[in-house]
Length: 254
Length: 228
Image (tube, rainbow over the protein chains, first blue to last red):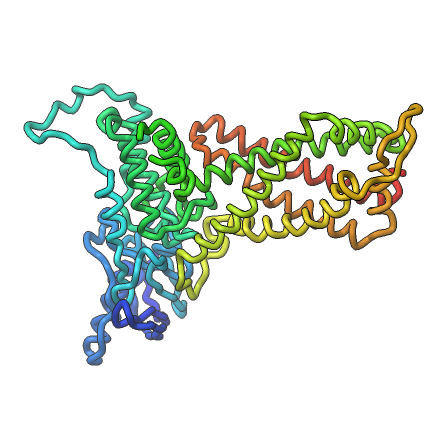
């Protein structure tokens, strides 16, 4: 594709801190290369703001190669921007044309309160993982990888679920702010494997209980989460969580 | 885990929505099947006999209580879920996501359900109340007296364009509600198997189109005088 430069208008959500009301600020950005990533474009804008003596825009980012799950921008009405199976950091400016206006908002959900500007607090996800998104093993030498035979199909499904990077785009996209795709992926990737089996019941029950406690909504299977997931996590994982949860709840001894 | 905890968690509430939803889908099959007797073109003889069976036999009468319980549970639980889901995002987006990733009717189940509730109030007042409470005119079939529910239908629909339009709109709301609800109920109950999902999706589309269509044909054909 031919390289080109563009001038854009950015409307960005600015919010000093969690208690500030926040508002949109409009910024012109000039000479943006089509080869830049979206975050590099924000970097250019921030340089400009710093030179003007203004507060730069706070936003989350880390690896900038689409695998860490830190970047989290809601761009023109879609988490992570217009591309499929893509994170904000891997969105490139060739997605836009000269003269475009781009509206950038933070993830919106009560369970993800805004810390500053475009940064939200996603520690609710960490607490859900702490509630059961692990397996208990004695540490020591690593077990031989092939010691436990696993069917190829199951291994593939587990791996596909484990691809979740916990960015929270599913919550941001869901009309109910439901975290079911995230929790479904985390429960599935362990429930599908023999190593995850011993704790599968408590895992499903405790993770859902924590999810409800954090204030996420319930799932209505609209599929918006799956459509925006940068890792293409299937909505099938939500159905699996529904089954895991009810089977665990019905067979629980207490 | 306590029973109350299990069925008041977000997943438990959705299970109740799914189970009652499938129960109501089963009811629709019975309802549309029995009402289709009006298309026998026999002046309502077959239909009145079928209605008599439903009203006099113990099994349908007991199921009727379950039906009311199921409908009320589905409606109340649906509203409560809609409210709590809406309140999970106090501050919304300036640019809404709209149809990027989901169908409008899948996001409008609360609205469609509320329209169906309003339709049901009218529908129950039109037919259930006269059948069970205030009484219907008698009609003689083969020397035996029956309630003339067919006559009641003619009376409600013939010459009442507004009522016919409301019934057709109700059928549209039902079609869209089912288009999402049919397959969603099975997913909520944990169906993940690809083959079954494909089956449920295609049967769901067929059901969501066919059942409301047959229902809508009833007031329309009575209004247009196809059925007398």
